[in-house]
Length: 132
Ligand SMILES: [Zn+2]
Image 1 (cartoon, rainbow, N blue to C red):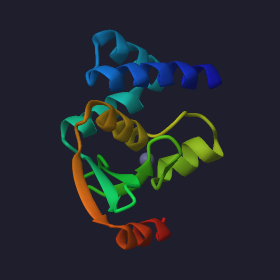
Image 2 (image 1 turned 135 degrees about the vertical axis):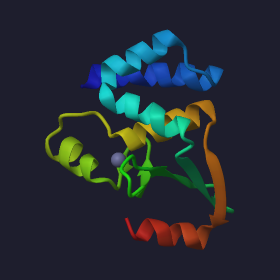
Image 3 (image 1 turned 30 degrees about the vertical axis):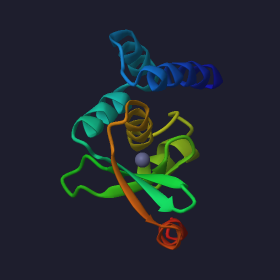
Image 4 (image 1 turned 90 degrees about the vertical axis):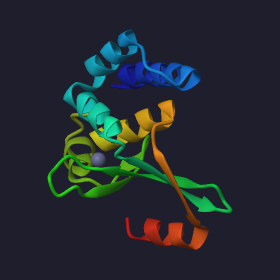
């Protein structure tokens, strides 16, 4: 698990530096994250990632659209947390996966710059976070 995360981190850094994803990088990420990475790329392609920044602090969180027909939105921190069911079930409880597709989508979108950006007052951001 740790090695996987270290490899993924290196690839993310490269993607962030170039703001684009090569076929080799896609292959590595697919190997590490499997179907979740595929789903994440679909979410990013559909512009399903929104970055919400609090003003004036500049602190931010991502809101990612799910893939089901209901189009739920999940608040998530790419590296630490997602509000979705899979995060608690597959990752926290069973430890079977490294992270969920929303986290991957948020990280991918922020690495290549493909997200919409909403700025809200810090008080509103605090309110959003208090509901997590
Ligand atoms: Zn999630």
